Image (cartoon, rainbow, N blue to C red):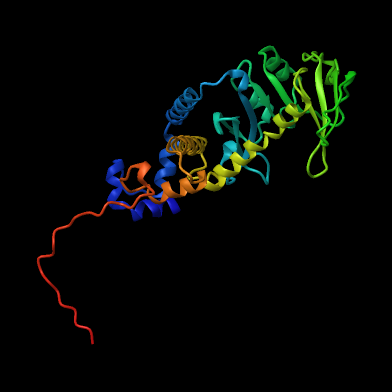
Length: 328
Protein backbone atom coordinates (compact mmCIF):
# COMPACT_ATOMS: atom_id res chain seq x y z
CA UNK A 1 0.00 0.00 0.00
CA UNK A 2 2.95 2.37 0.48
CA UNK A 3 3.53 2.49 -3.28
CA UNK A 4 -0.16 3.06 -4.04
CA UNK A 5 -0.45 5.80 -1.41
CA UNK A 6 2.76 7.42 -2.60
CA UNK A 7 1.54 7.57 -6.19
CA UNK A 8 -1.81 8.88 -5.02
CA UNK A 9 -0.20 11.70 -3.05
CA UNK A 10 1.67 12.78 -6.20
CA UNK A 11 -1.31 12.41 -8.50
CA UNK A 12 -0.78 15.81 -10.09
CA UNK A 13 2.71 14.79 -11.20
CA UNK A 14 1.90 11.40 -12.72
CA UNK A 15 1.45 12.97 -16.15
CA UNK A 16 5.24 13.25 -16.36
CA UNK A 17 5.30 9.45 -16.47
CA UNK A 18 2.30 9.10 -18.74
CA UNK A 19 0.59 7.29 -15.88
CA UNK A 20 -2.70 7.42 -14.03
CA UNK A 21 -3.70 6.58 -10.50
CA UNK A 22 -3.42 2.87 -9.82
CA UNK A 23 -4.32 0.41 -7.10
CA UNK A 24 -2.37 -2.60 -5.90
CA UNK A 25 -4.64 -5.13 -7.59
CA UNK A 26 -4.19 -3.33 -10.92
CA UNK A 27 -0.41 -3.55 -10.63
CA UNK A 28 -0.54 -7.23 -9.66
CA UNK A 29 -2.87 -8.12 -12.56
CA UNK A 30 -0.77 -6.17 -15.06
CA UNK A 31 2.48 -7.80 -13.94
CA UNK A 32 0.88 -11.23 -14.03
CA UNK A 33 0.39 -10.98 -17.81
CA UNK A 34 3.31 -8.72 -18.74
CA UNK A 35 6.47 -10.36 -20.05
CA UNK A 36 9.50 -9.92 -17.74
CA UNK A 37 11.91 -10.26 -20.68
CA UNK A 38 11.82 -6.52 -21.38
CA UNK A 39 12.99 -5.72 -17.87
CA UNK A 40 15.60 -8.50 -17.95
CA UNK A 41 16.93 -7.04 -21.20
CA UNK A 42 17.22 -3.57 -19.68
CA UNK A 43 19.11 -5.04 -16.72
CA UNK A 44 21.60 -6.79 -19.01
CA UNK A 45 22.04 -3.61 -21.07
CA UNK A 46 22.90 -1.65 -17.92
CA UNK A 47 25.32 -4.38 -16.85
CA UNK A 48 27.13 -4.07 -20.18
CA UNK A 49 27.31 -0.28 -19.89
CA UNK A 50 28.66 -0.50 -16.35
CA UNK A 51 31.26 -3.09 -17.33
CA UNK A 52 32.39 -0.97 -20.30
CA UNK A 53 33.42 1.78 -17.89
CA UNK A 54 35.62 -0.53 -15.83
CA UNK A 55 37.97 -1.71 -18.59
CA UNK A 56 40.01 -4.00 -16.39
CA UNK A 57 41.65 -7.34 -17.13
CA UNK A 58 39.56 -10.49 -16.74
CA UNK A 59 42.28 -11.90 -14.49
CA UNK A 60 41.47 -9.15 -11.98
CA UNK A 61 37.76 -10.02 -11.94
CA UNK A 62 36.44 -11.69 -8.80
CA UNK A 63 32.88 -13.01 -9.14
CA UNK A 64 30.86 -14.03 -6.10
CA UNK A 65 27.98 -16.51 -6.47
CA UNK A 66 25.18 -16.93 -3.96
CA UNK A 67 21.39 -17.03 -3.60
CA UNK A 68 18.90 -15.57 -1.15
CA UNK A 69 15.44 -16.78 -0.19
CA UNK A 70 12.34 -14.68 -0.83
CA UNK A 71 9.36 -15.87 1.25
CA UNK A 72 5.97 -15.72 -0.51
CA UNK A 73 2.35 -16.23 0.45
CA UNK A 74 1.13 -19.81 0.06
CA UNK A 75 -1.12 -18.70 -2.79
CA UNK A 76 1.98 -18.70 -5.03
CA UNK A 77 1.46 -22.26 -6.28
CA UNK A 78 4.46 -22.14 -8.64
CA UNK A 79 6.78 -21.59 -5.64
CA UNK A 80 5.08 -24.05 -3.27
CA UNK A 81 7.66 -26.11 -1.40
CA UNK A 82 6.03 -27.73 1.63
CA UNK A 83 3.15 -27.33 4.03
CA UNK A 84 5.02 -24.56 5.82
CA UNK A 85 7.23 -23.11 3.08
CA UNK A 86 6.45 -21.16 -0.06
CA UNK A 87 9.06 -18.95 -1.65
CA UNK A 88 11.49 -18.14 -4.40
CA UNK A 89 15.24 -17.73 -4.72
CA UNK A 90 17.24 -14.91 -6.25
CA UNK A 91 20.48 -16.25 -7.74
CA UNK A 92 23.20 -13.65 -8.30
CA UNK A 93 26.68 -13.36 -9.78
CA UNK A 94 28.23 -10.33 -8.08
CA UNK A 95 31.30 -8.44 -9.27
CA UNK A 96 33.22 -7.75 -6.06
CA UNK A 97 35.41 -4.92 -7.40
CA UNK A 98 32.57 -3.11 -9.18
CA UNK A 99 30.15 -3.74 -6.29
CA UNK A 100 27.27 -4.64 -8.58
CA UNK A 101 25.49 -7.76 -9.89
CA UNK A 102 26.24 -8.92 -13.42
CA UNK A 103 23.74 -11.80 -13.61
CA UNK A 104 20.44 -12.60 -11.94
CA UNK A 105 17.99 -15.50 -12.11
CA UNK A 106 14.80 -16.40 -10.26
CA UNK A 107 13.72 -19.91 -9.29
CA UNK A 108 11.37 -21.59 -6.87
CA UNK A 109 12.88 -22.17 -3.42
CA UNK A 110 12.89 -25.93 -3.97
CA UNK A 111 15.54 -25.61 -6.72
CA UNK A 112 19.05 -26.34 -5.45
CA UNK A 113 21.64 -23.57 -5.74
CA UNK A 114 23.97 -25.73 -7.82
CA UNK A 115 21.19 -26.50 -10.31
CA UNK A 116 20.78 -22.77 -10.97
CA UNK A 117 24.56 -22.25 -11.07
CA UNK A 118 24.95 -24.72 -13.94
CA UNK A 119 22.74 -22.43 -16.04
CA UNK A 120 24.92 -19.39 -15.34
CA UNK A 121 27.33 -18.08 -17.99
CA UNK A 122 31.02 -18.70 -17.29
CA UNK A 123 33.56 -15.88 -17.70
CA UNK A 124 36.81 -17.61 -18.78
CA UNK A 125 39.80 -16.64 -16.68
CA UNK A 126 37.80 -15.04 -13.84
CA UNK A 127 38.00 -15.93 -10.16
CA UNK A 128 34.84 -17.52 -8.74
CA UNK A 129 34.12 -17.51 -5.01
CA UNK A 130 31.19 -19.48 -3.57
CA UNK A 131 30.13 -21.49 -0.54
CA UNK A 132 29.02 -25.06 0.21
CA UNK A 133 25.73 -24.68 -1.67
CA UNK A 134 27.70 -25.17 -4.90
CA UNK A 135 29.46 -28.39 -3.95
CA UNK A 136 29.68 -30.22 -7.27
CA UNK A 137 32.88 -31.71 -8.68
CA UNK A 138 31.57 -31.75 -12.27
CA UNK A 139 30.77 -28.02 -12.15
CA UNK A 140 34.15 -27.29 -10.60
CA UNK A 141 35.79 -29.20 -13.45
CA UNK A 142 33.87 -27.08 -15.98
CA UNK A 143 35.15 -23.89 -14.33
CA UNK A 144 38.68 -25.30 -14.24
CA UNK A 145 38.57 -26.09 -17.97
CA UNK A 146 37.63 -22.44 -18.59
CA UNK A 147 40.87 -21.40 -16.82
CA UNK A 148 38.89 -20.00 -13.89
CA UNK A 149 40.29 -19.80 -10.39
CA UNK A 150 37.98 -21.45 -7.82
CA UNK A 151 37.82 -20.46 -4.16
CA UNK A 152 35.27 -22.35 -2.11
CA UNK A 153 34.75 -24.48 0.97
CA UNK A 154 34.90 -28.24 1.21
CA UNK A 155 32.94 -30.37 3.63
CA UNK A 156 34.44 -31.41 6.93
CA UNK A 157 34.20 -35.11 6.02
CA UNK A 158 35.77 -34.79 2.53
CA UNK A 159 39.11 -36.64 2.49
CA UNK A 160 42.11 -35.08 0.75
CA UNK A 161 45.10 -37.10 -0.46
CA UNK A 162 47.87 -34.72 0.65
CA UNK A 163 51.08 -34.78 -1.38
CA UNK A 164 52.81 -31.64 -0.08
CA UNK A 165 52.67 -29.35 2.95
CA UNK A 166 53.47 -25.68 2.27
CA UNK A 167 55.05 -23.24 4.73
CA UNK A 168 52.68 -20.86 6.47
CA UNK A 169 52.98 -17.07 6.17
CA UNK A 170 54.86 -15.78 9.22
CA UNK A 171 52.61 -12.75 9.72
CA UNK A 172 49.25 -14.54 9.73
CA UNK A 173 47.83 -16.29 12.76
CA UNK A 174 44.45 -17.26 11.27
CA UNK A 175 45.88 -19.66 8.64
CA UNK A 176 46.45 -22.99 10.38
CA UNK A 177 47.63 -25.17 7.46
CA UNK A 178 48.33 -25.03 3.73
CA UNK A 179 48.75 -28.14 1.64
CA UNK A 180 48.43 -29.55 -1.90
CA UNK A 181 46.51 -32.72 -2.57
CA UNK A 182 43.86 -34.53 -4.59
CA UNK A 183 40.14 -34.93 -4.00
CA UNK A 184 38.64 -38.45 -3.91
CA UNK A 185 38.69 -40.19 -7.31
CA UNK A 186 35.24 -41.66 -6.75
CA UNK A 187 31.97 -40.01 -5.76
CA UNK A 188 28.68 -41.44 -4.58
CA UNK A 189 27.37 -44.47 -6.48
CA UNK A 190 30.96 -45.14 -7.57
CA UNK A 191 30.97 -42.29 -10.10
CA UNK A 192 34.38 -41.07 -11.23
CA UNK A 193 35.33 -37.58 -10.07
CA UNK A 194 35.85 -35.42 -13.20
CA UNK A 195 37.77 -32.82 -11.19
CA UNK A 196 41.04 -34.71 -10.78
CA UNK A 197 43.61 -31.86 -10.76
CA UNK A 198 45.72 -31.07 -7.71
CA UNK A 199 44.17 -28.48 -5.38
CA UNK A 200 45.16 -26.33 -2.41
CA UNK A 201 43.50 -26.75 0.96
CA UNK A 202 43.75 -24.06 3.63
CA UNK A 203 42.48 -24.41 7.16
CA UNK A 204 41.51 -20.95 8.34
CA UNK A 205 40.24 -19.84 11.75
CA UNK A 206 37.54 -17.16 11.58
CA UNK A 207 37.11 -14.32 14.06
CA UNK A 208 34.46 -16.38 15.86
CA UNK A 209 36.84 -19.33 16.27
CA UNK A 210 35.27 -21.52 13.58
CA UNK A 211 37.73 -23.46 11.40
CA UNK A 212 37.02 -23.49 7.65
CA UNK A 213 38.46 -25.77 4.98
CA UNK A 214 39.04 -23.57 1.93
CA UNK A 215 39.78 -25.15 -1.45
CA UNK A 216 41.45 -23.45 -4.41
CA UNK A 217 42.75 -24.72 -7.74
CA UNK A 218 45.48 -22.04 -7.83
CA UNK A 219 48.72 -23.66 -6.66
CA UNK A 220 50.83 -20.50 -7.03
CA UNK A 221 48.89 -17.84 -5.11
CA UNK A 222 49.87 -17.09 -1.53
CA UNK A 223 47.82 -18.54 1.29
CA UNK A 224 46.83 -15.07 2.48
CA UNK A 225 45.60 -14.12 -1.00
CA UNK A 226 43.34 -17.18 -1.12
CA UNK A 227 42.02 -16.53 2.38
CA UNK A 228 41.31 -12.89 1.49
CA UNK A 229 39.47 -13.94 -1.68
CA UNK A 230 37.14 -16.18 0.28
CA UNK A 231 36.55 -13.40 2.79
CA UNK A 232 35.21 -11.22 -0.05
CA UNK A 233 32.21 -13.56 -0.25
CA UNK A 234 30.58 -11.52 2.51
CA UNK A 235 30.14 -8.65 0.04
CA UNK A 236 27.31 -10.49 -1.66
CA UNK A 237 25.66 -11.09 1.72
CA UNK A 238 25.76 -7.33 2.32
CA UNK A 239 24.32 -6.77 -1.17
CA UNK A 240 21.36 -9.04 -0.45
CA UNK A 241 20.73 -7.28 2.86
CA UNK A 242 20.94 -3.85 1.20
CA UNK A 243 18.47 -4.53 -1.60
CA UNK A 244 16.02 -6.23 0.78
CA UNK A 245 16.06 -3.36 3.25
CA UNK A 246 16.46 -0.41 0.87
CA UNK A 247 14.64 -1.54 -2.27
CA UNK A 248 12.00 -3.51 -0.34
CA UNK A 249 12.06 -6.77 -2.30
CA UNK A 250 10.70 -8.72 0.66
CA UNK A 251 7.15 -7.52 -0.06
CA UNK A 252 5.69 -8.12 -3.50
CA UNK A 253 2.83 -6.57 -5.43
CA UNK A 254 1.83 -9.97 -6.82
CA UNK A 255 2.67 -13.62 -6.18
CA UNK A 256 2.68 -14.84 -9.79
CA UNK A 257 6.03 -15.83 -11.24
CA UNK A 258 5.87 -13.02 -13.80
CA UNK A 259 5.09 -10.38 -11.17
CA UNK A 260 7.97 -11.57 -8.99
CA UNK A 261 10.45 -11.56 -11.88
CA UNK A 262 9.39 -8.07 -12.95
CA UNK A 263 9.61 -6.56 -9.47
CA UNK A 264 13.05 -8.04 -8.81
CA UNK A 265 14.31 -7.00 -12.26
CA UNK A 266 13.08 -3.45 -11.63
CA UNK A 267 14.82 -3.43 -8.23
CA UNK A 268 18.11 -4.55 -9.81
CA UNK A 269 17.74 -1.92 -12.56
CA UNK A 270 17.19 0.72 -9.88
CA UNK A 271 20.24 -0.55 -8.00
CA UNK A 272 22.48 -0.28 -11.05
CA UNK A 273 21.20 3.19 -11.98
CA UNK A 274 21.71 4.44 -8.44
CA UNK A 275 25.20 2.95 -8.16
CA UNK A 276 26.25 4.37 -11.52
CA UNK A 277 24.84 7.81 -10.69
CA UNK A 278 26.45 7.79 -7.25
CA UNK A 279 29.84 6.91 -8.77
CA UNK A 280 29.59 9.49 -11.58
CA UNK A 281 28.56 12.34 -9.25
CA UNK A 282 31.41 11.54 -6.81
CA UNK A 283 29.36 12.66 -3.85
CA UNK A 284 30.54 12.47 -0.26
CA UNK A 285 27.19 10.91 0.64
CA UNK A 286 27.05 7.19 1.30
CA UNK A 287 25.16 5.02 -1.17
CA UNK A 288 22.30 4.62 1.31
CA UNK A 289 22.00 8.36 1.96
CA UNK A 290 22.08 9.01 -1.79
CA UNK A 291 19.18 6.58 -2.30
CA UNK A 292 17.19 8.36 0.40
CA UNK A 293 17.88 11.70 -1.29
CA UNK A 294 16.68 10.37 -4.65
CA UNK A 295 13.58 8.85 -3.07
CA UNK A 296 12.60 12.19 -1.52
CA UNK A 297 12.94 13.98 -4.87
CA UNK A 298 11.67 11.18 -7.11
CA UNK A 299 8.52 12.99 -8.21
CA UNK A 300 10.19 16.37 -8.67
CA UNK A 301 11.74 17.50 -11.95
CA UNK A 302 15.21 18.38 -10.72
CA UNK A 303 18.65 17.49 -12.16
CA UNK A 304 20.12 14.63 -10.20
CA UNK A 305 23.42 16.45 -9.76
CA UNK A 306 21.66 19.36 -8.01
CA UNK A 307 19.68 17.48 -5.40
CA UNK A 308 21.84 18.90 -2.61
CA UNK A 309 21.35 22.46 -3.82
CA UNK A 310 18.34 24.61 -2.86
CA UNK A 311 15.51 24.42 -5.35
CA UNK A 312 15.15 27.57 -7.49
CA UNK A 313 12.50 29.95 -6.24
CA UNK A 314 9.65 30.14 -8.71
CA UNK A 315 8.56 33.66 -9.57
CA UNK A 316 4.84 34.26 -9.21
CA UNK A 317 2.69 37.22 -10.15
CA UNK A 318 1.85 39.58 -7.27
CA UNK A 319 -1.63 39.13 -5.82
CA UNK A 320 -4.33 41.32 -7.33
CA UNK A 321 -5.99 41.93 -3.97
CA UNK A 322 -4.50 42.94 -0.68
CA UNK A 323 -5.80 41.41 2.50
CA UNK A 324 -5.54 43.03 5.91
CA UNK A 325 -5.18 40.69 8.85
CA UNK A 326 -6.67 41.98 12.08
CA UNK A 327 -5.41 40.29 15.18
CA UNK A 328 -7.21 40.77 18.49
